[in-house]
Length: 318
Image (cartoon, rainbow, N blue to C red):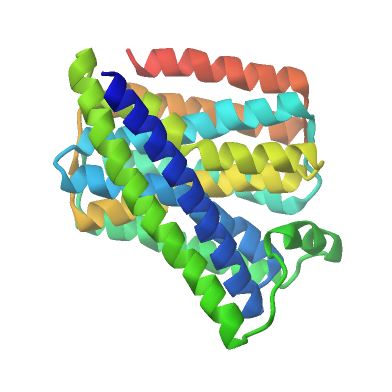
């Protein structure tokens, strides 16, 4: 089992750098094309940090492990709010000052709620996957239109994710596309290694694929979010930290589950509906209550989120 553990850790490392390269290349390319900094921060960065979940879920689904694919998404959303946001707030209280983040909270709650009727029959077919992707398209359209009304201060804060660019020169274009290709390659290789090692660990430990997806795999794929948010928190850029988490959770449901079920329809165990979904909804509601009553996530609330993550994870594991 030691070999599988080392393989899993190595896969997480490859996955992390793949996501980093993808975000870097996509952010620079988007900036070269004149895309708004806020759009880059809430879409390209969120999509990049959700890319590991997408690749792992697709690989797992195609490999006949739908429980691992769905458990990965549910566990990641749970870890993003409870583990990642909790640790970020503990490192430094997060003062949320922009209307962008409060808007994202509402969208995350709505999309999480709309997921319930889709998974009620323990199956996501291609049509339902297309509906999820349609939600994402509507969300991105809304973000794009809203970005035209952004405040200069908000634009400046999100511009950190845009990076320095050299315009649309051939050299800059080749560099950005190169980073994107390296990132995608890293994601695919990392996802394959993690999936294979996770399945081997599940068999060796005598636990289900759903449990492995909800714990080891989801925490591993949440590392990009943790790195992004921890750095943003320490730099006192709370809106980026919180916005990245909310955007990533939105992408996980619409983008990851949507694309995965289009590629290969998902049929999963009833535990997803009875435990995992309820845990994700509970921590989502907790997030709403924290942000709604005061636009700051204090250290004690960070500890509360972290504690809720541990409790809800134990609940989800049955």
